[in-house]
Length: 404
Image (cartoon, rainbow, N blue to C red):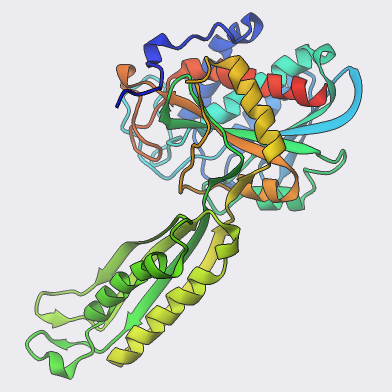
C-alpha cells in the first residue's frame, strides 16, 4: 500500500505567511531555552517566569499564579465583536533522563520535555506576539492559557475552577499537540472522540506464604494475580460493544522474594482507556467483580484502589470543522489533513472541552530523515522545529476565522 502522507523533505511551508515564518528563529530559541530547563507539574516556576517576562515585554495583559504556576494572557482585537476564543498550551515536562546529545539538552537531571510541551509553549508565545502586533486583523478577545501539570496530576481542572474561562466568558477553545505519530506537515483533526478517557487502578492480593514445595499449606498470591490479569482482558472482549474501542492494561506486577518461597502478597497496577463516555463506571465495576470473585475462589483477600484521571477528549463538530478548514489552508490538501486520527492516549484538555465547545488537534512533527521520529515519552524524543511556525499559523487563522 502506498502511503498518502507527504515525505517530510517535500513539505511546503509556503502557505505559512511570511510574517509568521520570520518568527522561526525566535520560536526555536524559546523552545530550546524551555527544553533546557524542564520542570514537572505544578513546579513550572522558571517556565512561568519566562512566559510572563515575554508577555510583559510585548505589553500583553496577563495573570500569573493561577493553579499555582498557570498563566492567562488576554489580547483584544481592534474589530468590533464580542466573541472570545481561548487557546490552551501545556508547559510541564516528564520525570525522564534525556539521552539526546544536542546543545539544548535538558540541564535538569531526571527531567525532560519528552512530549513536546516546550514546543506547545513556544507556539503559544509566538501566537501571542503575532496577535498583539496585528490586533487590527481580528475582532473579539483571545485568551491564551498556559497550563501546568498536564502529565499529572492535571492542571486543567484547577485552572477552570480558578475561573480562566470567565471574565470574559470563553465561547470556544482550541489546542494542539505536536505529534510524532504523524509526519511533518500533516494535521490530524476530527469531530467527536480524539483521545481516550484515562482510569487507573492498583490492587494488592493478600494470600498466605509458605514453602514452594508445600503449596497445599499456602494461598499463592502469584497464581491468584495471574488469573486476575488474564480475566481482566475479558472485560473488553465480552462486556464492551465490539464497535467501541477500549483497553485494559496491567503494567506492573510485583511479587515474591525467592524461587522456593510462595509469595503471600502480589501487587499490580494498571490503566483503562476508552472513547465512549457512556462506558464510565463499567470498568470500575467489572474490575472489582473479577478481582473479588477470583480472590474468593482461592481464599485470598484483596485491597483495590480505582480512580478516574481524565475523561475522553471530545471535539465539538462545529469547532472541529473550523480547524479542519484552516488546516486545508495551511497544509497541502487533501493528503496533509488526516480526518480520522485517534489515540488511546489521554489529555486533560478534556476538562476544557466539557465546559465550552472546542477542538484539540494533532500537528505532525516527525522527520525520520533527520532522526526525529522517536515516540512521545521516549528519552530520545525530539521533533522537527520547522513545524513551529505552522502551529502559530494554525492558531492565528483560527482566531481570524472565529472572531471575524
